[in-house]
Length: 522
View 1 (cartoon, rainbow, N blue to C red):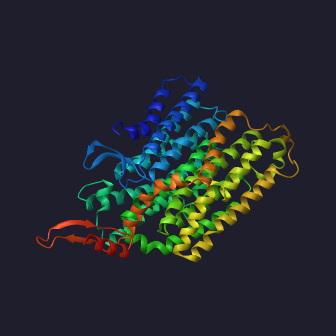
View 2: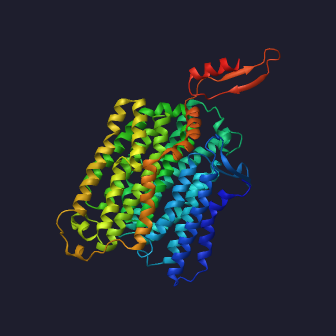
View 3: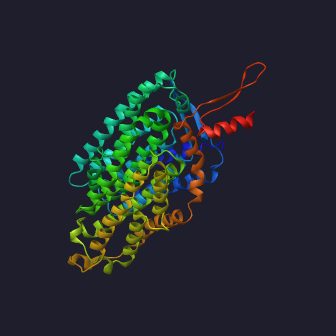
């Protein structure tokens, strides 16, 4: 494709943000409409990626390269079976987030939508960058709008939550920056990810580099014990920011492990696997138990993310095809279901101005359509068959079971605990007698709220019933990743006469395939 579609999708929201600067701040509806229009058009642009993507190709597609600064700092972007769906998830949820902010954001509307559009550019840039320094630039740039979005439009403790989020993230980012420059020196001054993949890094150096990357990504996931910033950020953030934070930003940590930490440092990964498994299991069980005792419904959903992301990371570290594909699929499923739950919480808060579970009860009698939306989103998060959460969770558990049966048994506690805290929360909020007279004045969901909930519900059923189009596009990426991590002996085929290298086959999944390929070649 000759047209630079990826650059357009990445920077179109930024162009929209610049355009909003010239709109008078008093024209609030125009600002909202323009922001929504920019994100919706960008989503339409991103659909081109899905239909143009070749599932059979193993290489990076829609590559764009260009000079930037020099010294290995080049503009290099593209997509594969991993970044494709994360870009689509981002562009799909951003117009929904804008719609959900329509009535809730009344103060500094212009600045709010400008920061939301800048945030979209930063997130997409992270997912499409194949120059390590360019990736870092987008990774850090994403912090700026998040700082202002939570710090300006957040709740009562917004300054504390913002500073905690930024300090945690910047600490990990500085470690990663040091590791990036070490890799730069080892690769003869290159930030190109494919040059770095070819490096043979000594195991003792791999350990330190992996730790630097892993801490940064574990903070973003977040894995225990780096999770403490997440509940505070979610509780204080506006609804739309919580949606993007849970649905997309947390996935940046898992993406970092898949894109960088695992393929660059395979020896270190295998050495740290026991510790990583323990941290994932603690995140699963601790996050679920903490969600079970929360009094604030938004805090409950936040802790549920800790538990679900723990299962995703456990599947990633299981290092087999079913587990990794299940992890990527569950990243998308979690983005939809948890993002939808935060939208549900936002709708309740706009009517009741409280998020305490004890202040609700019997809401379904006043809001039957809303109750149906809440039920579907909750069941998707629990993993009901027919909804997207089931496909992701069953693939994760199946893949983990192939690696270690005990890990799979303990990992299933994610589903059990999710059923406990979500069903109990639904019962206390939606069913039973009406405890608060304010509930009698609640109005059911309006057209705007239906407009941003219905697309998510449709995607939940589509991904839960027919996952093949998604999994098929992941296959080649996952196989390439596992080949890099599970390196076996390399086969060198040489001609008998001149002993010249004829061609090389490397990074095959196992020795049996190596022998079969060698015999076939001879």
